[in-house]
Length: 266
Image (cartoon, rainbow, N blue to C red; front, top):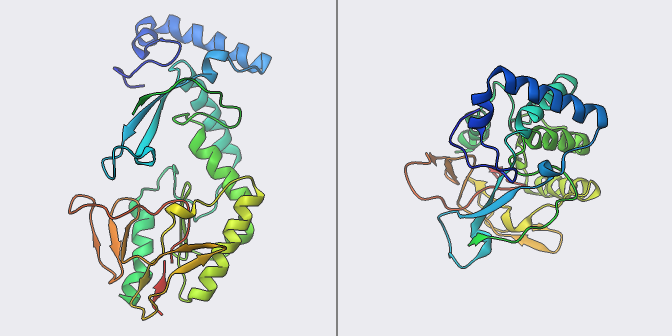
């Protein structure tokens, strides 16, 4: 674990455990075994400190332009890594999921997504309870989310890469037919809602490559306007099939939660 990190609600720094050395390992081992034996999560581990950080774009007065960063107990993180390793040994994810997978990097889905394109050319807040799931920043959160999403959506994961790409909750749907893409988007929306999740239509974007169809995409009663470019995992992809790296210009808007897609629809 890296040092000089902000302390969590228990105010125990990483440096304290490192300074204890072997004695600290024994203390943590006994503590973790006690938790496993009683099957009760310590109350301090249920708390976190959230700080709002401006994303750097849009109005500073809009709460939607801030990202909440959570700081949790450092004592909890080694325990979570142990549990995370055990879960990964028992579970497998679909090949379409790239998020938080060993041996996979963001450039993999970016490259896969470009293949069909080239072929067609505020401060702290008061505390509030978290009653479901794990805290943001939890070691367990990324993989557990991917496992749950995988279990919820096997019926809509029938197409291979690059027609379906997932990086955690960042999902890209690609298709050569707009009507078929619309059906796939609605199928995903239904699957997510049946599982207690929600498609964020406001963050969904739609782009066509080398197509004369400039109309928008309908998702139920909502309209997703067609865009000429969007950011996908860093680089900005555009309708002509080109892209800019994250360092070559401003981002237009991020691909988030769901859906892309006579060319290819993204």
